[in-house]
Length: 74
Image (tube, rainbow, N blue to C red; front, side, top):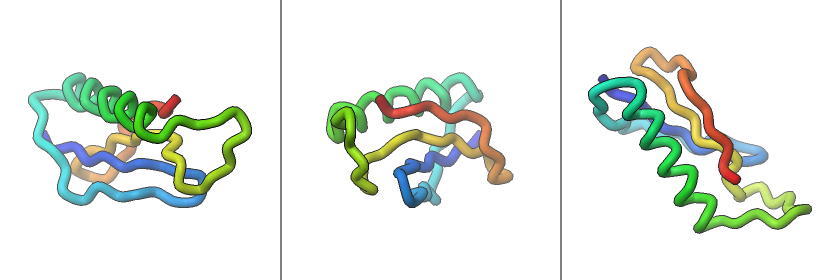
C-alpha cells in the first residue's frame, strides 16, 4: 500500500506527493518515526524557538488522503 508523508511546521504543511510503498501500516509508521528522528537531529529546537521553519511533526496519510498516524519531532 502507498503512504504519503507530510512534515508540519508552525505555519505550513510540506506535502509529500510521491509517497512510498510499504507492506503494511506498521512499516509506514516505523518509517515515519525514523524520519522524525532524523529531522530532530537536523533541526534541533531550542526551548523558546518560534521559528516557522522548524519541523514539528511527521504525518502519514493513506491513499485516500486520510491522516492515519502522526508523530512529533522532538
